[in-house]
Amino acid sequence: MGERRWVTPARTNTDIVRTGGVHGQLTTQSLWIEGTDTVRMAITGGSGAYRGATGELTCDDIQTSHETYRVSPDR
Image (cartoon, rainbow, N blue to C red; front, side, top):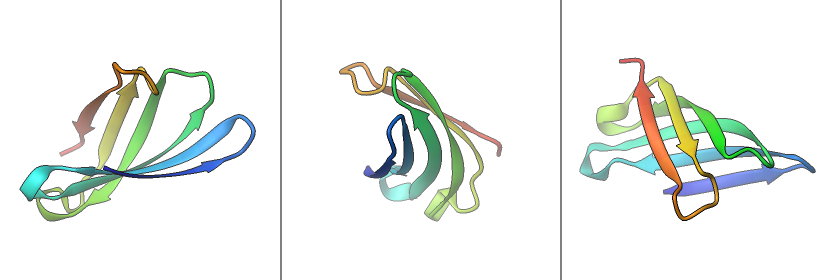
């Protein structure tokens, strides 16, 4: 997984590329507010089997050993 973050005092703009194995990658973008433990990210596209994907990726328990991701595609 690749990740880029731009930091301001209380907000972080996060771009994530999530690898889906040999099938391709999903790309997402969100604004995370420091102190929250859940962030909803827009799925902004992808490659391979995920080309043109839209929907939402939810990340819970951010920055803990229990961090999890849920993908909710529109299609």
